[in-house]
Length: 319
Image (cartoon, rainbow, N blue to C red):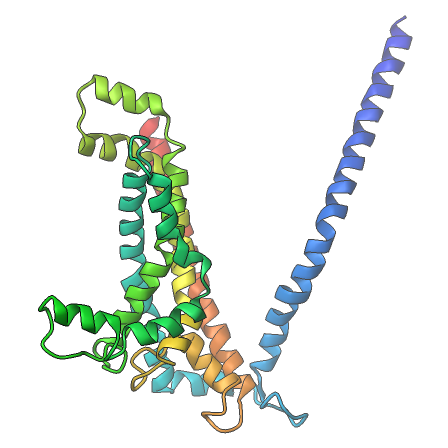
């Protein structure tokens, strides 16, 4: 009987292993197309971009010349690149905090189950998200122009005496683009925050209400600590999205006036594909892209380390 039992157990074990291998094989088969497409359209361009960055090449002819790291040396000495580099971070610093803060306020207001027509308000805020940035940029050029609706409204209510050309003034152009970017992406951030808020157990709010906690105390003691992990993800997405902004600036200002809104993506486009600088310099543009990608990777690494440090302190505090 004991021998029969051992044989039966061994057969069951072998069957489990076989089923596990079969499941693993099916999983790999299902994700294989994604891996192939990812390698074709993400992995290979990154690898070949490294090679292009060592060439003096227009991308239009076959007379590419290997120049080693000369493109990077030239990049480090170009004041226009550093201006675009600085503007990328100005755009990110101006957009992300306001976007996160305003979206959180909107989420808190429109996540209230007692608010009438909350879904309609959420839809109205979300509408700009489904519109492409290039279309938004083209429309906003007319709205924020000297004879556009913004100037007309401000003059009608007495806040302006004469029209302001928001996109042609070097001191105002970046601020205007940042405001449009915040408005366009507010809805998506609100949805992220609402998803985080809806994960907070209602029992905690009911207990806080029984204990007499007010709205501010409930928010800072219950809501905020529980949605911070979601906030970290939203922060990372917004930082990455803001640093790689292109279509909105390209359509609204094209990096102008006088390079006041020129960011790294428009700088790369100008050298890689535009005829503004004469023949395109694909190798030089590739070196700019690699340098900026390293910057973003360092920022992401710092953010991961900070998050890990905070989590370890939190776990230590709980112990």
